[in-house]
Length: 311
Image (cartoon, rainbow, N blue to C red):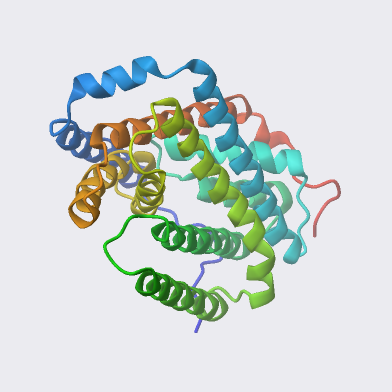
């Protein structure tokens, strides 16, 4: 079994692509308004006002380092396919893709734009590009889930340590097995390749978490850090559902409602307003990072992705 990947990017009428993309904005707004109506807006505003600019810049730097790891991971997959992409070109392409995903309401996403541009600039096959993008996404999701499970070990859950450890190990084994089978059968990725990509995915997710931890610390470090790390990673998984722009709204909903669930399970206090503030600030950081791709929107199409031409 394998994924039926087309030879060319699918073409749809422009109005359909624009409509689907534009609908993500009102959906995000509706979910966000629903969450904010249940919070103390004055408290969220106070958190934002007290955030020192230095700590925001530090969090932005951590997020930027995650993008470097993401670029290195993409280059690794392309090298495995015999396609060598210049690192700085790949970094620019990464930020341009981020810009397309977050800023532009057009019908083409960041991943699709990368595939299209590499096809036009270096004749990289579309089928190959789609498979590589799926492989990188799957590898990143694997590490995100494993880190999500691991964070439970540090939460004050109302179960014995051995039961929690056993449950976490079982989840890790099931997830790893599912990843190895599905990546091999559906994406034609070898287990060795998946393992080589893991350190880069760990770098991506670790610096994303570090960015969140910096914000948590700067805003007062209320409650248990493990609770917020768990919610942050859970929100990142929920944010992958492509119904809003950049996961906006869904992430805040997950942070707020997930915090209520943790309080019910463990009895520990989770500040919902703090969680929503952190989630909103992470979105602002993502948008700020996406702006780095703006200068390259019109220029990258004229650049060569490789030092040497690729047949």
